[in-house]
Image 1 (tube, rainbow, N blue to C red):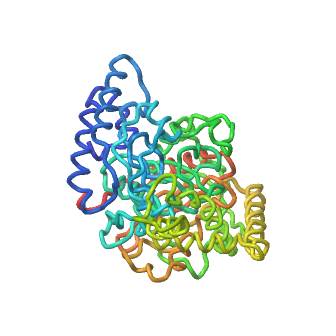
Image 2 (cartoon, helix red, strand yellow):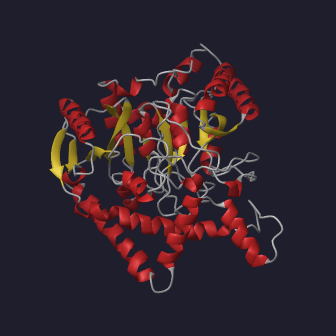
Length: 483
């Protein structure tokens, strides 16, 4: 059962080949057996999962149907879940039990999805390797000595190891697409505002976006269908009709214009990954797509702009964690200033402290115009580049990451080296565009992803291209040894 995709599970449940309760018990046993070597979960919710599974079976027995009804999933541990620890991978929230469900959690629960647990993540979603978690690093199931990517590394590792068919993630600068690429998954970052951020603990509010992680584009379409939609509780949620994503999967790619930016193939890209990306281009050409070289001239400024804007927003968002209202509080503070200093100094890890300090500096008097304001102007230039490109092409294609997964600890002493791994993904967040990563091959036994970007609210187009590609390739069907 653990090899079944979400789509196959939906068909199996509809045909009464197995029940949701049976499937849930199998996967919970598998997590208990295999996750100790991966560390992909922070919390397991066995009682909740079995209760939801029994309820889903009862709903099906009463004639209800639905692709997510009885399907097992997990949530990245920054989606608030009522009465269950929501830690954000941080000591700061180790004792926090959310008093309500995030909109994404509530929507998927209403659709009948079964929550198996909360997955490990970089602390407050800050990281590209899932090594900054208070609960320890997550291991890549393709090679346990390597990182799974971050910050949604727990979700990625769990799905890649067949502990469950799909999971939610969040993407601030590539945190769905990058771990998807490094673990051989399909991961989708929707258009900013397509999925509600209410109840999703914020890192950088103008960049964060929740999305699905699964093995196939078909499964991502099913999960996104349950997640997407307008939410009056979220002021950044956009009131745009949600199409039937599964219905668009089988459209022809004949005449589809695919742009390949020349800036993507610079000296920083592993030449073996470049070759795999070119192979993906050829495969899509055979399906009728038309390839065109394009230019994104301001891409070179994306990383410095992102690493000013994101920490600036983080320093503001994380100011609420002060030891007073909720979360970690230091022992025996001598006064209020001591309470603030020690609660934050002891509750936040090194990477989070680093980004708070950078952000506070960028927003300080005398530096706001020089750094933050300039970064926002660059952000607009990057968006304009995409708008110009999408007048010529329907999709933009390139590598998801410049390198395959690196060894655990290899970049801990050089944070900037880890930041550079986001070079291809952060532009979509700066511009608010939807992006998808799909499996494209292997380098030294480690997975490689190809990234697709589309105009606003064209998630269906991304899923269509990825699905057609996956019907004609088998990279996404490969399973890591031992899982």
